[in-house]
Structure formats: C-alpha cells, structure tokens
Amino acid sequence: MLLTEELESAKTYGDIFVLVKKAVRNTLKEHRVGLMLYLGNLPMNVGAFHPMGTNDIVLNRKLLKAAAKTEPKWKAYTFSILLHEYLHSLGYHDERQVRGLTYKVCMENFGSDHTVTDAAVSGPWVNLSQEDFQAMSEDMDLERVRDFERIESGYII
Ligand SMILES: [Zn+2]
Image (cartoon, rainbow, N blue to C red; front, side, top):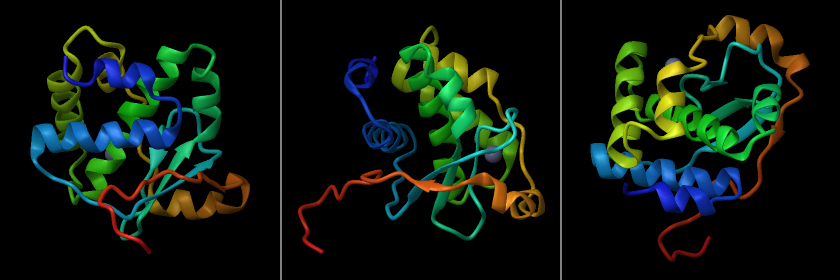
C-alpha cells in the first residue's frame, strides 16, 4: 500500500505526522499547517485531545509509553490518534464522522490488514470534554514536542 514502507522508516512524532498529512491529502485532498504537539498525562482511555479553537494536539503520554514496548504498536497508535486529531483540526467536529474518516484514510493508505487500520477501529476514542481537560491542566505536565511540524515549502522564517 501507499505509505506502509514510509511508516516503517519513520522514527519520531514529526516523521509520523508527515505521513498523517500525506495520507489525508491522498484521500481527502485537504491540508493544513501550524499545529503544535504536546505530550501530557491524560486518562488511559483517552488517546489525545485537541482543544477546540487552538492549534494544539495533546497526546496521552502514559498511553503511548505503554504502547512503545513494541514499535509497530507505538506507530499504529501514534498514527491513528494523530490522524483523528488532525481531522478535528481540519474542522470535522462530529465524532462518528471523524472515526469513519480515520478508518477510510487508514484503509486507503495502508490496507485492511495493517496494524494502523486495526488501531483506527479499536481506538481508544473516549472523548474528554473541554471542562474535564481544563480541570486537569495542572496534573497534565505538558511537554512540547520539538520538530513536530516541518516546513514543507522552501520558505525561510
Ligand atoms: Zn475525537
């Protein structure tokens, strides 16, 4: 499939996010830039959170640490969770629609028997409310991931 080999050579969150954006561009012809990634402590049934109206994605540090025991699992979780939150950031707010699109994008770019597509089906897709998120802010211990988004065109800041 289209992105299977590229995912195998991906090493970092930034590498995987490049592939998330490629996959969405392949399937939905949509694209955006300007996102920032953080790791934070969220409840274990929550993969990540995108506070609405911000450019931030907060990934669940403990969940990904647990998944990191095997590399394919870590990549599958990271890819499917980042993809889900990226779709929210493109303006898709309906949860069922986002889950359906996450699955479709994974299917079209990795095929039905890839770990990424399994992760897209199984979740964790429990949602945090904005209020819950704000209430936990202090215990989250947010840490910004550097080099998350690369500038793809050649312009100089
Ligand atoms: Zn969601």
